[in-house]
Image (cartoon, rainbow, N blue to C red; front, side, top):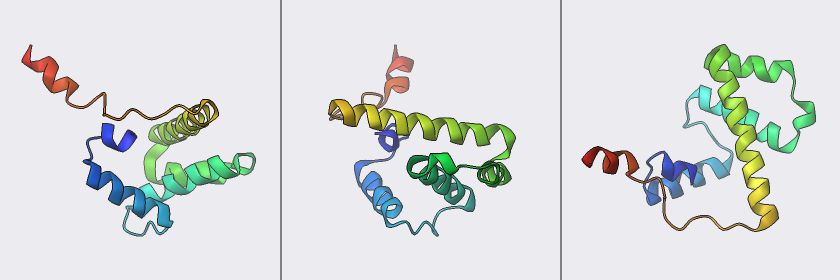
Length: 106
């Protein structure tokens, strides 16, 4: 859903998900690779996150944006676990699609 909200078309979402699922992220910028590695560790081994993990993010994202990566990753992990626990289905349509454009027409 997040990729659709970001504006990717269904075929682009499918391609991106396939790229991410392989674990071979060489086609992504180094900054994105660092964020993916952090998010994976945060999801699977959060007790072993260290200052070195944060320093790696900070190297690519800077001190402020690094915390955006940490926060958004944590939020997405949390929302996924809540949705899974309650078996909440995803919306069939992107409820955010074209909202700004529709508002501008009024």
